[in-house]
Length: 178
Image (cartoon, rainbow, N blue to C red):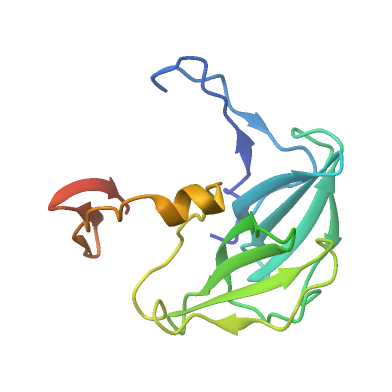
């Protein structure tokens, strides 16, 4: 919505089984109408890529504390990616480069862009095998020792399917979305 009902909050799990959570705390400075906020910490500073639901642009905000105060340091088309984007997911590549993935939901296209410093970004590059198929996923890096990875037996293949309601692995529903 564009009436300000969306505000990013921090929730922290307080149990190992993820069944108990803290009271939501607003991320001060990321006011109304910011959705899909993805946060990383780099060099003592938190960086958030968040969608401004009013302008339809991804914005870049920074803060010294996870709960804020946050300052928008990049707004409108600050990175040259265009508008009508959402679902950012930031990850660090093995060479130290930052990569953000995001979707252009009206066009059903998925993109990524790289940065060495979280300030200057490359031109967006399409992920054609994902475009038209997925939206809003999260990317998590996995550290594997190169020698161990090369020597490891290949993993057993799993059947991954999805529909407009959920993701299934080996015909078991593991994630649902609305």
